[in-house]
Amino acid sequence: MQDHPVLDRGQWAQALIQGRHSTSPRRLGAPGPDAAQQQLILAAAGAAPDHGRILPWRLIEVPLDQRARLGAAFAEALLERDPQATAEQLAQAAEKAQRAPWLLLALLRLGHAGAVGAEIPEHERLLATGAALQNMLLQASSLGLGSSLTSGQALQSGPLRRLFGLAEEEKALCFVNFGHVAQPRAVRQRPAVADYFSRWAPEPGRESP
Image 1: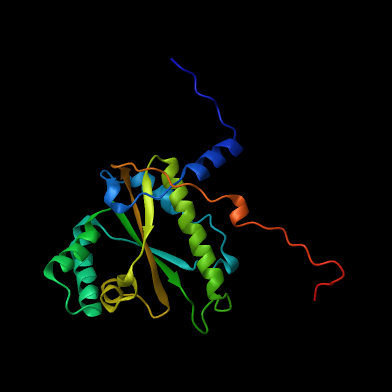
Image 2 (image 1 turned 90 degrees about the vertical axis):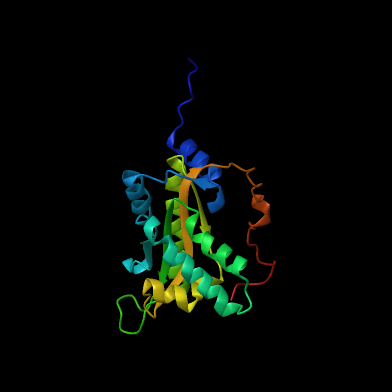
């Protein structure tokens, strides 16, 4: 029996972060996360930074027995964008609702005048929500599950907003998909640090404003 190396916290975190990758819904299979795993994933969102503790995100589960209604909203949204959409195209749009074993809709709360935390700008709310979603994806990866974020034009459509009863100040950001990896794919190459990092150095003789 081969011994496996024991990783310290830093090594474990690095392995988790670098090992995470997106798995498209069509490559996810049943079973999805069980009830205990779902709670771990949802609790991970609560560890995200949240200026003012305004909780700018909301998550809605779309259970399997409601996927047909979501699919109908996808098809209706497509028909609004393209009245000439064929029956095949409408069926393909509706089928997208059936793919992930566990499916959540992520919403961004934009805030409104007089509300608690109304002074927190939208970009900070979006950053906090993105951090919450990344925490969830990392937690899923730690459990051996596949996951991904998916979007599309239907997110901003009237049919979808009506289906979920979204408030005026709520914006649908993406769907969050979870399941077991049924069809692995090659992991994309990570960008080099030099592609997105630089060290600020003012020009000699020039003072910062």
